[in-house]
Every structure is written in C-alpha cells, then in structure tokens.
Image (cartoon, rainbow, N blue to C red; front, side):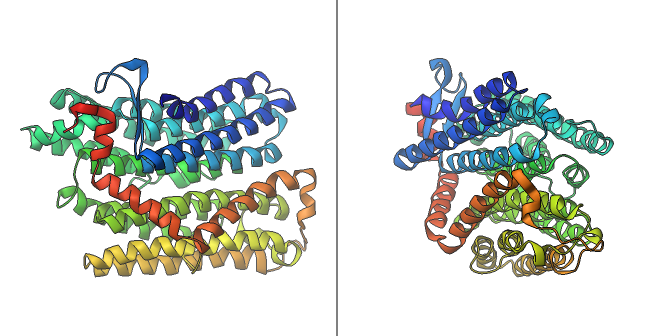
Length: 499
C-alpha cells in the first residue's frame, strides 16, 4: 500500500537525476517526458486506489503516527496529484520544442521535475513540518527556473518573487513552531484532536492567523499578490505555464486542508476574513487584467482573480461551496496551463506578446484561434464549458447562504473576464498585424508537433470537463464531504487511536 503513495513522489526526483545526467544530449529531454508520463500512470493508480478505499495512508520507516513521517491521500489529494502529473507531462512535452540546448545544459528539465516532485509532496504529506519542507523544495526549484538564462527582467522578477515568498515562509515556520509548542504535535490528523482539546483557544486563534496570512500570500490573494504579476511574465512560457497551473493552487490546497481538518472556520473570524479576501481578490485580479496589454500579464492577473473564486468556496464552507471550489480547481489548473502554452505559440508566430504589436492570427492561423477560444471562453464561464459549471456551483452556494452582494460581485467579475479575454482576441487574432505579417502555424517548423500536441490534449480535457461534468462534480462532492467529515482520514492515519 505504501508504494502507491511513494511512486508519484519518487518518479519526478528519479527523473530529475537521470535527465540531469543526460542534459547535454537529446536523450535528456525524452527521459523527462517519459518520467512525466510514468508520473501520470502512478497518479492514476493512486486515484483508483483512493476511489476504492477512500483514504490511503502510509508511515515512513514504519514509525506509527503521529511520531513518524506520514504520507496520506484522500480524494482531494489524489485529484491534485493527478492534475499535477497531467500538467507536468503537458509542459514537459511543450518544453522539448520551446527550450533550447543552452537552457537544457543548465538543467532545465531536472529543475522542472524537482518542482513537480515538491508540488506532489505538498499534496501527499500528512505532516505540517513536511509541508513546510515541500514548500521550500518548490521555492528553490521555482527560483531556479525563474532565473535560468540570466536575463535582466528574469532576475528582477525573481528577486520580487523570492523576497515576498520568504516572508510567507517565515510566517509559516513561525506558526509551525508556535503550534507545536501549544499542542506537542505536527501530524495533521493528530492536530485535529489536539487543537479541539486545548484550553488555549485564544493562542490557537492567533496561530491560525499566521497560517492564514502565509498561505494567502502563497496563493497570491489580496492584498498579498504583487509578487505574481511581477514575475510570471519573465521566464519561458513553459515555466510560466507550470507556475500558473500549480504554484498558487498549493497555497489554496493548504488553506482547504488546514481550515477544515485542523482549524474549523465555520462561524469563525476566518470565515469573515476569507469572504472579504475572496471578493477583493476577484475584483483586483480582473481589474488588473483589464489594465494590461501584454498577454502574460493579463493572464497573470486572471490567475489572481481565479484564486478569489477558490477562496470563496472555502469561506462559505458548505458542502456545495467546497465541491464548487474543488471542481473549479480541476477546471482552472487545466485552463491556466493551456492559456499560457497558447500564449507561447502566439508570441512565436506574431513576434511578440504585447497586444499593441500583434495581430492577424485568426486569418492566417485559424487552428490556433480555436485553441485559444476554448480555454478563454471556459475561463470566462461560457456554457457549457467547464468554467460555467464551476461558477454555477459557487454562485449557487453563495445564494444558498443569502450572500447576495457576493454573488453579484462574482457574476460581475465573470463579465469582466469575458471582456478581458475578448480584448486578447480582438487585438491578437482579429485585427491585422501592424507590420503586415501573416503568421501561419507552419512557421513553427519542426517545433509544431511538440507545441501543439499538449495544447490539443489539454483542450480535449477541458471540453470533457465541460460537456460531461457530472462524474467530475460527483468526485468533487465526495472530496468536499471528506473535508467536512475527516473521520476516514483520521482513521487511516491514526488507526485505532483516531477519535
């Protein structure tokens, strides 16, 4: 049983070592692609096991919880591990066409695999200190990917990225130390009972604020999001895509895990704070997108806006709201990776990412136009695409608790998202190119297959989520039910000692 948890975590690190050893040969990139494909298979096996037994847990070195290192996967963890593996495979395949030999010699594929391993570890750990360790693995590897190539704007973006993320790391580590001092444990399953039984609830409330601020900063929530639009447009498009799909989602996952399993946010200060944070994150994100002219900056601000919808599900905290947030996670990870990959092809064909100096793509590259419209309309919430169902669930949950203003804001943000996406369409696709260029997909040359294959595959997944949403909504509802009733999680981790 333990190996089904270890394989999704071990594969990226083994792949990183092998791809680094062969980084100066073409074999290195295909080792990375093969390893990413194996990670998808391992994630599918884990998902199958979780669907069969509800929660899979394992103790490293056979040290019983809460004393040893615990790996655990419930439905939410399995969903996130699978989405990580799919995103990793798509981006790794795209990178074989985008990343040149110079960056490969510097270890691009190895660093990317380490990042994927860190993200996977964060989703599988059952221990708060090890969650911190995996965040550090992510931070170091993401910093490496940001500065790879050494361009001035990369260094500038990386400094802002690391500085603000280190602040959140200090808050996170401080919260861990204080929580251990109060409860004497850091195992998340064990913490549920220890926190509930503690007679120092006032101190625990303060500690929970440390975690709330730290993870909101990791998730790029209002007002702690400035690091994201300052950095996500600076690296290669493959790096931007994996960042957009996964990094902020680890912060959201951590909030979902802590404020359902350890700190119950129902009828608490956290719920009130999160509602305001969610609304302001949605609004500032979409308004920031409307003010930009560079495609990746627009998409970066749209990441922030999407985080607001995810936090809204946690803030409301009902089964429907949490199910909506989890379904939104499925939709958003796929769509965000897809949009950044499409943006990379757009830049390659039109010669730039600034909308003022691009154009003509619809006439000369209609296939790319379709591949952009699918995720763009899905992000905006057009029926029957996946974003529509995600927003329906969240808005309905908001209306169920009579938060009329919040529901109105969510709908208004959806309309502004439509406007933002149609701006990209009008400038990059519909208008003529200012230089009179007529770019065609064949201009990609031998890179065409490597770039378009992951884009087409992700478009297909997005369409499946939209046109056949019920199985995925059912899965999201089951994951939400496990968050609200963690008895199976506690029993799997603690065994007979579970309350």
